[in-house]
Image (cartoon, rainbow, N blue to C red):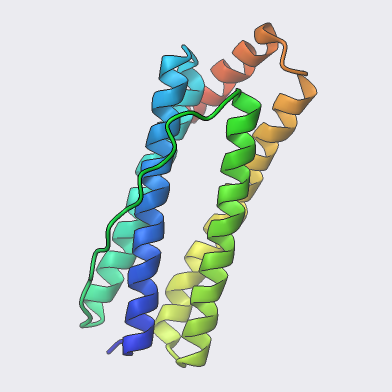
Length: 164
C-alpha cells in the first residue's frame, strides 16, 4: 500500500508528465507551422513518450492500491522561437524533470517505499537519455550557426528518429 505522501508525490509527477506531453505537442505544432517537419515529428514523439510515462505512474498507483487524482494541466506557450531556442528550452525542461524525478525518489527513500524506488530507477535512467538526446541536438544546432540549409539537414536527421 502506498503512503499518502508517496501517493500525492506520484500524482504530482503524473501532472508534470502530462504537462510535458502538452508542452511537446505545442512545440510540434510550432515546428509544423514553421515547415520543419523533422523537428515536429521528434517533438510529437516526445509528447507520446511523456504520455506513456504518465501512464506508467498511473498504473503504479493503481497496482499499489492507491488512488489517482488528476490535476489541471497548465496551458503551454504558443510561440517558441528558433529551433535552437526551442531545443534549449527542451534541454532545460528535461533538466527540470530530472530534478522532479530525483525529489520523487528522495520521497520514496524517506517513506521506505522499496517498490517505488525500484520503479523510479527506470525514470532515472530515462532522464539520463532524455538530457543526452536534447543536449546533443542543442550542440548540433549551435555548430551550424543557424544557417537555414544546415538547420534543414538537422531537421531531416532528427525526423528519422521513428525509423531507428
